[in-house]
Image (cartoon, rainbow, N blue to C red):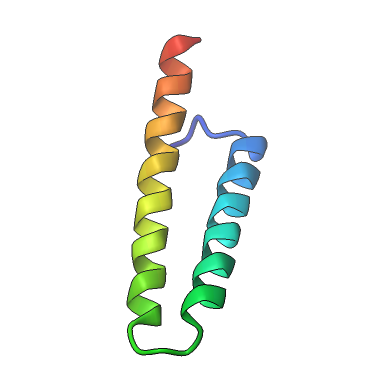
Amino acid sequence: MSELTTGDWARYAGLVALASLVFLVVLGNRDGALVSLLAVYLATGTAGAVWLRLRRERS
């Protein structure tokens, strides 16, 4: 993870913020909203890590 640049961190933070906003708007204050939000963090983190790895392997 030490190879991440400032731009990579900014893209990742933006993706997490957008996903969080969408889920909070969709789920509101219903039961399970926090668990769903944590699932979004896990999914976006995994997708971001895979995307960065593939991008670095191609270059």
